Structure formats: structure tokens, C-alpha cells
Amino acid sequence: MANSLFTSSFNVLRSKASESSMSSPNNQCHTFKSILYFPVTPRFYSAQKKNVTMCASMDGVDSLNSTSFSTKSEQDTDYVPVPIVLIDQDSDPDSTIVQLSFGDRLGALIDTMKALKDLGLDVLKGTVTTENSVSQTNFFITGSSNGRKVEDPDLLERIRLTIINNLLKYHPESSERLAMGEAFGIKAPEKKLDIDIATHIQVKDDGPKRSLLCIVTADRPGLLMEIIKIIADVNINVESAEIDTEGLIAKDKFHVSYRGAALNSSLSQVLINCLRYYLRRPETDDASY
Image (cartoon, rainbow, N blue to C red; front, side):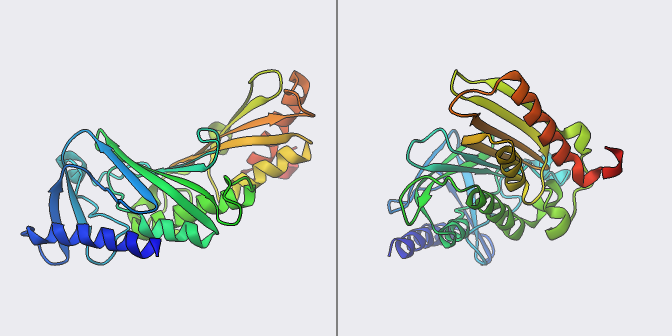
């Protein structure tokens, strides 16, 4: 029932845009002071700093006209913004926050919310903010069965890949800025990252009971599960994580501990060495070790 109300609310907003539009029937546009406001569950809140033009394509509600917000210089150079997918486990005590941005090209993301629901998740609320022409959408999600934040690493990776798959589907131009675009996109990234250069691993102090593991490396499908498995193989516990995908780069942070305490320098170095070895393996000849 909530989903039908949510969809209906968007359709009403879209029909209002078409009433005063002078565009073609397949691409109605209207100027709104706020991007989105849905007074139904899941709740959406919108904040922005200037008027924008909202365009809703009749062939789908998960995307906007690819150049509707672009500046003239961006249109002239076929500018494609960097897609960012961030999964935040720390900011909210009761839910996992999924943050998504792709310049100013994202629409209501109703299909993305449906995909999350198909994974057995509930979207409790959402926020949309716009600053410097960049729109950022936050979903607050929990497991449908237990009402708690997502802790299963496999499910976290499925969430990440599901969102990226939807980006590739509804915004195919994003493929040239995503690692998965090489296999599933219409245009592969022009430059591949050198894993040796792109990979940076650091363990920082984060109090007496845990440490902060920071990993920057080239993104690829299944990366999160690989990292979690490597950490577990060293008998280190992952307490929480922040999973950040910025274009071709994965920037992940993990709060980790060993037997209820922070990692000492020796164990930190063991973990760094293991991660560096396994993260470089896809591009490295095993005989070199």
C-alpha cells in the first residue's frame, strides 16, 4: 500500500509538471523550488540552495534528462560526473545509510528503492540535498525481517552492486566512470587503474578497544567480500564499516578489533601485508612472490 501511494505521489507531481510545459510529450519540464517531497512512507526530505528545473521522462521515473541540469560547458564537453555510492554503518544507530550521488542526474530513484526491497530491506526514509549542482540522496534502510541495520557483509556487497547495476541501467553514460562498466556498461572506462599505485592500506588508532582500517584500492565486483574474508582469516573482528565507491576507486573503512582490543603494531602490519598481497593478486603473477 505504501509503495502504491509513493508511486502515485510521484505521478501527481509529474503530471503537474506537464500541465504548464511547452516541451514535447516525451520530456515534460517545469521549474520547482524544491526537488522532491513525498508526504508518505518512506518519507523523503529535500533541501537545496537554488531553483532548479526538474524533468521527468515519460519512459521511466528513475532517471532525469541527462543534460537537464548540466551547465553549458558540461554539455559542450560531454561531461560525465563521478558516481558515488557510500554505505554508512556508523552515523545512525538504528539503520544503515546508503548515500548515492551522480552529479545532478538522479531522479526519484523509485526503481532503486524497489530493488532494495527485493533484497529484503525496508527504506524507512530518504533525504535529498542539492549543493553546487550536485544532488545527494540518502536512504535509511533496515532488514525487513528484524528491523535492524544491515550487518551481513554479503548483503552489504549485494546492496552496493544492486545500486551500481541500477546506475548502469538508468544512466548508461555512467559506465565509463565505473569499474563494472567494463563488463556491463555501454562504454568501458578509458583508463584502467594500476592496482599497485591505487592501493593504499593504513591502520590507525581508534581508542583502546578498536582500530580503524582504511583501504583505498581499485574497485571490482566482490571486493567487499574479499576484504572481509581476508580480515577474518587473520582472526580480526569487524565491528562496523563504511563502504565508499567513487567511480573506479573503492574507499572503505572498517572498525576492527582483536579479542576486544585495538590491534598492536605487529598485528596491524600482518593485516596490511595480507590485504596488499590479495588485493594485488588479480594483476600480479603469483610466481613473483
